Length: 505
Image (tube, rainbow, N blue to C red; front, side, top):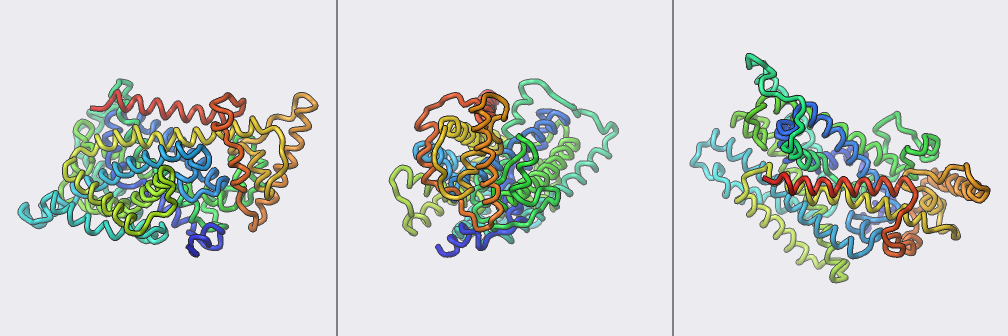
């Protein structure tokens, strides 16, 4: 508890680089192996454009989650949704997160099984115990169970770093193998499509969304980030005050911690985009007409890249379990008002999680189907719909709150004035509008000045609890860009879910 308090107060925490490693390791694994198949469904240029669009949208929603986690002082994704959107919505999210992370963990174990049974068969023969799917998965279940018990993500720092290195090696290995296969063909471009516009191309969308998603751990990573993290991108402004001169559409991080998180998100997404694109393009070029939903199944059984990606999945599994545990704890809190589970129950639920995912992976062999369903339903809900609802809720709060005394520190003023990275209305208009705009500018300056002070506390959540947004005003129109941005994300989420249902094979 004392260590947790120090993290929340900003007196210690994870570094920016370790946060990037954790985010990368959360996303790595099964998703990257399905990308060559996604390129085969959407075409070379088509899937590259799709990946770029999804990466940009997901980076934006990651920043939204971090920003609101700071605003509501939320230690987990579930707690954030419960405080911002209410207990019922928080309970729904917790249930969806458990299902999503459970499905993701099954996908990781499918990859582990495909990878190591092939290697064992080649090295030890088909009669070895580890060449059999059931025995191998049971053994890995016993290895993974103790790795799921630590409650702090920093305990997995070295595992995360090793997994990122293994992922980078896998990207290089798959790229080299892919271009070798292309060079060996008489016609390198035979069977390759630049873009496909048929209904089958839509199948690629959930696969790409799943691959880039790490949102389940974003809030936890932000909470554990040190108070004044190093800037990973020197070009980013150094202090919160400087962001208010960048324009209306630029992000407006109110603390140094949020600036550090912004840099971590950008670096994470660059690493993932470059690595995923190299694997997707080279895998598709190598096997344009026969690529598997798990690209490593198209490579020789003894390829060392198999072992590398298997190690990535082993490291990713405990990181998937971490937010799953937080989600079911939030679910108990929402449904039964149990704020802290007994240790025996927490251990039992973790054991059940591992046992059920291992058992399901023994029965499921098609990785593509798992990624498609999970990415197009639960992931779309977490990645797009809930951040969209947070933006709309904040816009409604600001629209329905016309006046009131300042609460707490300058950061509270900043949170009331700032609408998720957007400033107030333009100063043109009536005299009353100009006067209100001047007041907002003064509040914004006080908030930015407070943000410069490293001792400035987080926003008083009591004041925000009185501004319930949806719960008080209902689903109303708020003439602000944040409302439109949120509505757009909700629409994207619904479209992805519909496409997933229509393209399920």
